[in-house]
Length: 276
Ligand code: BTN
Image (cartoon, rainbow, N blue to C red):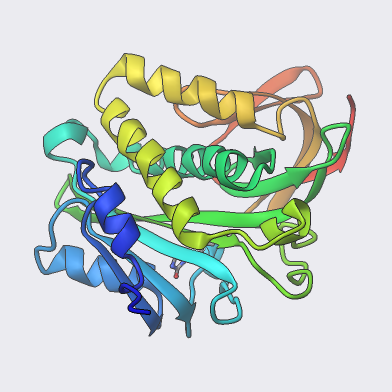
C-alpha cells in the first residue's frame, strides 16, 4: 500500500487557512528555534513546523521540554502581525499564547474527547471531577521577533503529550499526563493538529479587533482552571498567595491578596487548594 507523507492530510485540510504550509520532520533541535530563525530570514506568515522529536525542546522560563520520539504533538507556527492579524504590537505578542492554548484545549475535546483546561498562563491541563487540576497535558511558548519598536513575527509553539506508553514525568507544572491515558486509546496527532490549527486560524484573525480579543478572553476564561483557585504566584525572587479572581482581556491574572487585587503579567502559579 502506498502511504502519503507525514503531514499530507493536514496540508490538504488546512489549505484554505493561513496554516496550509505544514512541514513535518522526524527530528530537529527545537521547532520554535527553527521558526524564529526562519522568521528572521524572511519566512512567511503561516508556516507550520511539526517534529516527531526535539533534541533541545524549549519550555517557559528557560526550562527544557522533553518527550520520547512520536509521543507528542510538537509544533510551532509563524505568525506575522501584518495582513489579517494587523495591529499587533510587541505588548500584544503574548495573546498568541492564549489563542494557541484555547485552540489546543478545544482540539483535545473534539478529537480525544478530553475536557482539557488552561492553567494560567499557558499550561494545558486535565481536571478531576471537581475541577481540580489532575495533571499537565502540555504547554505553550510564544516567542517574538521585534525589530526596533515593531513586532515583526511571533513564533508560537506547543508541546502536547499525546500517546505516552507511561505517564509523562512530573515537571514544574505538577504531574504529567497524556491524552491517551485519559481517552483510553491512542489519539491521532495529525487530527489534533488539524483541529487545533483550524481554531487558531480563527483566533489569530480575531486578535486584529477589540471585539475579537474580548471573545478570545471570554473563551480563555471559560476554559481556565485557575480562576476561583487559591494560588501561590511565583515571580522572579518572590511569591505571594491569594485567590485567583479573573483573567483580564489583556491576559493578566487578577489575584485577591489581603484586601487588594494584584494583576500579574508574568509568573508561575501553583494551585494550592481546590475550592469548588
Ligand atoms: C512550557 O514550558 O510549558 C511550554 C513548553 C513548550 C514546548 C513546545 S514543543 C514545540 C515548541 N518547540 C519548542 O522548543 N518548544 C515548544
